[in-house]
Length: 133
Image (cartoon, rainbow, N blue to C red; front, side, top):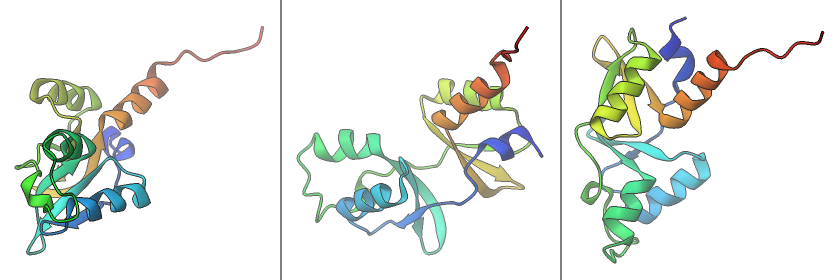
């Protein structure tokens, strides 16, 4: 199994572009996730994150029960090929200033990778093993 495949979230969580921000926030809470992929006509067109809610909606005084996800979503979704390494993903996130990457295989989104996923991965591969004498 490739390192990105083992690190990414494979069960994609999505929301419709015309859902309200409040519906989106409830969905994130229920699903225990910090981002959702946004769908329009069955296609992933963007991503929306907790940061988007705070910076693009709450800070501007938006009516969260009326304002739509499409007003705060980020498009296009930054992506990385599944054959790349976790280090490549880390570098790409830093270069783009994003915290989430869609993972693609032959151009199709097959997973989502977050900064938290990478932290767990790097901790696992770099932590020295503690042994008894």
